[in-house]
Image (cartoon, rainbow, N blue to C red; front, side):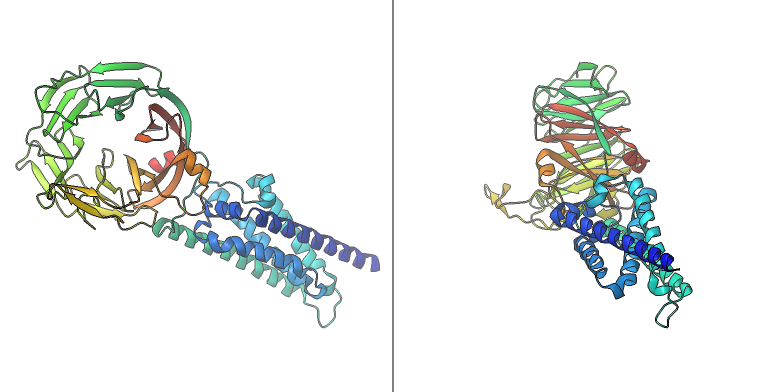
Length: 503
């Protein structure tokens, strides 16, 4: 009988020692690289919104639990706390593996040496050890008045595990709500949503992506607007096309070519003009007459476009719908661009159209705002990018007796290039978020992804610099992402985690 008691005591002491070593090692390793630990928690699909207080709290509890074992009378309490912690860690990994939107990188400590599944099994093993030590602890086998019956002990253990599971679920649920509805400027970086596929050096500047068909990508050039360079999607088969256009026939200044197979479109808001042709012969076949002067134009279909023009009041920007087959041909939507300052620079931004979803999208350059409208220009939804810059922060001065305007103070550019595919919006952000690596920002362009159906942030990923560090164009089609970086045309393969969002 005495040998059995000694065996139980030895087992309990051994388990206690293992937990002391485990939690001290985990806490110290996190403390030594606390910034990285907090960053990784911030990118977790479960705890992103709570990383600022969970990171120090976990370390504190781990150290406190290790110290509890030094008090013999509190050993069972220490084992219960260990059981609760290991339950939390186990449920956390279970949700990550089965319900998380992506599997993040490791979070420091022992986890860095194991895979997620291996650590899940490791945690379960330590939960079993904690339960066994709790029930074999000699204090509860003496039968004295101070002891606790095994029935009550079982109920307490069940309560601890249930409570721990509930805490993780509540943190997960509240974090998801905050991240999707009221993001505290914490980005999520899944593992490899896009992967580098191919690159070709176009060698000359002033290029832009004019469009993508099922088989080819078309590259325009502002300096030589009638020449179109095209590649297959693997960037191997190259062609040069010549548009038949008499550049002297009109006072062209800023010609832009847009390819939407089987047509191509030529636009110049300074003339103003919209022309349509066939990519089979690259000849102009129709002029969409009646278009007003414009600063931006995006083709919606063969007969209509959404444009941005300037109204008569201080040349403020205004969105309009142009339909060449209707009377009147132009329908101004003055309520869409809400001014915060001057109406020109404060409403400057990127105009897009999703042919698949039939959404008009406008993303502001200098504030964290975008909106969607239907094909007729009626506002659908307003949304915000995840940064916190909600108002423009610059001054505008008038020049030449009010004939022109210029920004006359330092300013922050929030959103740069953008692209849309189906219901997803891709935005090149210029603002660094919380818990983000400085080296990553210096070496890449950060692309934030938003769901236009429910106006929520989804994820982020980097597009790394090549020989250039300027992102000139961005476009997505099916399972390919194309980027024009300096003079390099780069294609990325879109992986399953992002393709699922597209569908």
